[in-house]
Length: 88
Image (cartoon, rainbow, N blue to C red):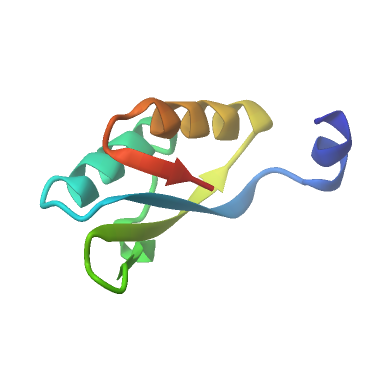
């Protein structure tokens, strides 16, 4: 990952896509998880898109990334959460 870090200059706005089952608690739960890693996260940047049949919901959040460690920790938190099917 050192090569990747050499081309990324922090801080930067970084989009993260989160996919999970479309259920009422999904969005607020994901926003809370994102805020654990970016206290200044602006929920106004949230974009959501349901799957064709509405079973899944895809969220795109744009965080202010300050380090590779922050991004790794966020992806780990999201990936470990039972509501998350995939985080990209």
